[in-house]
Amino acid sequence: MKTIGETIGGLLRGRYPGKAMILTGLTIILTITILSLLAPYIAPYPPDAPSVPEEYQGIPLPPSREHLMGTTNLGYDVFSRILYGGRVILYVVILAAVISMSIGIPLGLISGYYGGKLDRVLSMIMDSIYAFPGIILAIAVASVLGASPKNAAISLSVVYVPTYFRMVRGSVLKLKQSLFVEAARSLGLPDRVILVNHILPNVAPTVLVVFGLGSTDAILTEAGLSFFGLTVSFPQPDWGLDLYMGKSYFLAGAWWMIFFPGLMITLLALGFALLGEGLAEKLEIRTER
Image (cartoon, rainbow, N blue to C red):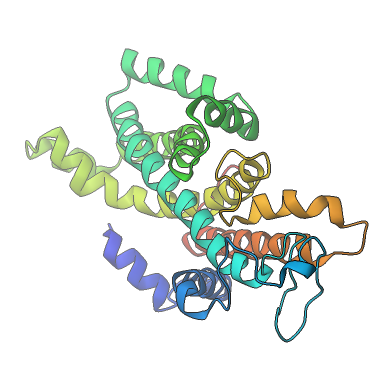
């Protein structure tokens, strides 16, 4: 029986297969995270104010020495908005994952361990939520709550709580029949101790895989929410919002307005996808995609 620390330590030491995908995914995620955190120090211009003279505002300028990724039609520096926009999407995705885990994992543990009517009711509720297409449900919840990064995170958590619940519950249903759980019961350990000290550490690998693969989908969903103006309001930088602002100028030749935001969304999603797939391969967990 491995603890959470031993599992993570084994991954980092390369004791399991699939190390390359994990290292590549972590490199992409950490690079984007560091650049976003250092945005106030490395961004050449403010992200929410024009960076060109007034006579050039209204004309998208292509990439140059002064503007590495060009400017928008309103004169905003694309590179500066890319750096700051990473903060929004990372905040939304990580907060959504924390909320989803804090709800889905405990409910999955309780439902799978105790079973009975409680399990049937919780499973029915989660299956009802899971039946809705994720992006549609997120848009509906975000529309009700209003446009803000925190509300976007809440809307995403509503979508992904059933995923954590279903995966954890399935693992608990198998683990509670194991000999070490039966031994713990025979020793008279309370259910809370069995769940926290014996079952939860063995569910941790499943949670790690779900986090990696779920975050990939959450990034794309958050970009969709931003595209429809349900995360932030202009001129606050956000990759999905910048995609929306640049779509009208793509056919006019201003490809940089959508290329760089789209590239960053793809890279960040790829990083989490590689992390999740690598963890799944290392831990030999078959996940529902």
